[in-house]
Image (cartoon, rainbow, N blue to C red; front, side, top):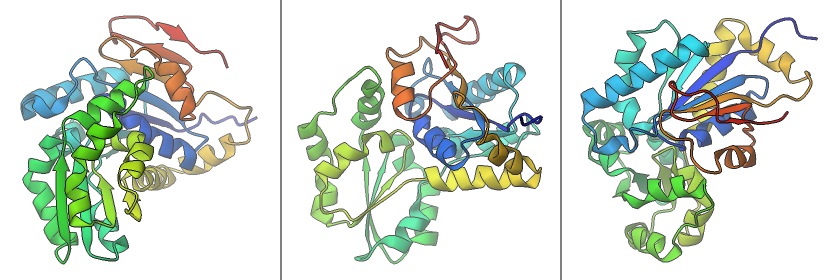
Length: 285
């Protein structure tokens, strides 16, 4: 029996999109214990000012660390990552990993130098995106779509919602017109929509998101403190539920435990209206 506790990773997002990143981390590090924290009471972040986003993120993460200590924090939200990371790093000694749209790997994959960037309206407008494109994809045509409905459709999947095929097809028209062969999923919600997106854009050859790169970065950080070896040994332990707790600042989404289990992220407990309420669901191991 392993006498060392497995490494702990706190994954934060404004909603359920960060589950796509948590699933990548679990596949890459199946021996790690995950805590998922969603500020769904503040969702969506795109229509909030930067000071509000910074304060909400930093406050909630600090409260979560008091109850669920972590060895690595992952801010699995593109909007939050653009403004929160330096403030969060100034408040905690725990290593922090953020996400940025995967422009660099997309530029390495595209064959026709035509890339589609799918992001939230807030991300599409941010100057840092212009800098990413200039630095890593300056020789490419990058078509941007910032559609407000995509994140909502991803959130509705939790309760069994269906992505509206016609509306999605209409939203992707600019990518078809530009004949992009590579699409960057520039929001952590969007991998949850991947199968619907593939049906809407059958000519796209490459779909790129940040999940795998984040998982590799988490593994590297754990390796620096010899915790990666502990995570690898933990794989041999009796099967355990990988998510210690799923914490939601608002009511826990209907069907969330089952949805997470479908992603391989079965939670031991789900807490709605956190940190004020006790767990509202306990999942059997």
